[in-house]
Amino acid sequence: MGNLSIVTIVIIVANVLISYKGFSDFNFFEKYKFQVGAIKRGEKFRMFSSGFLHVDTQHLLFNMLTLYFFADIVVQDLGTLSFVLVYVGSLMLGSLLSLYFHKDEYHYSAVGASGAVTGILYSAILLRPEMSLYMFFIPIPIPAYVFGIGYLLYSIYGMKNKTDNIGHDAHFGGAIGGYIITLLLANWLFETNLLMIGLLAIPIVLLFVLKRMGKI
Image (cartoon, rainbow, N blue to C red; front, side, top):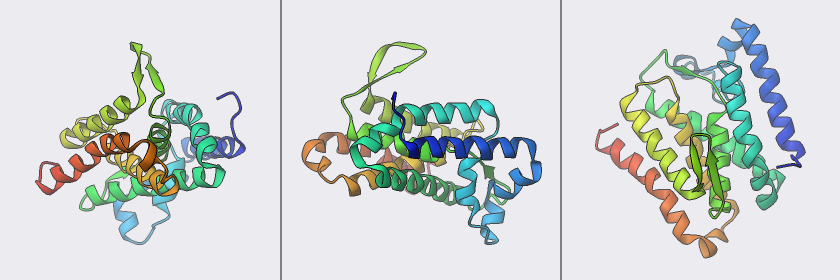
């Protein structure tokens, strides 16, 4: 964590600069945010550009701090190019899942790097399932895989109840992207961490079972 890779720094700087441009320029923000109606009219670039906009400084800070803590695990284990593939792929999978769940909500909109960052987080958990995470409100270490599974189960709960303004579907789509792309790039994990691969797949399978049953 002390030696951030150049690619991580570039992504953080891009998020900060573009987000602050959006904070002060309403038209810029509106033009590049994720919005179902505009995307359906052909503005597909919004599915990518929205991943560099944020609602406010707190939203931006939370995403960039999470990226800061986990990015270099993925860079070290997979390499710079693979890290970029995981980041961009997770961003796009997050947008695609949001579009899938909100395709009939013409005015639905969202912004944030959460999908991409969640993909990096899930990738890091796959690569280092033995690591422990510390939460501000929980004074004991939490195994990374327990956190990953719990986070996605909470996202399913959020998607089902729709009681907040958090884009849980983008988070979930990003996690799916991080999961799938990491396994494609690091197929040795099937030999070393097969149990973890199965455990981390549980909430992903559950989401689509619930969707098929009409529960979400």
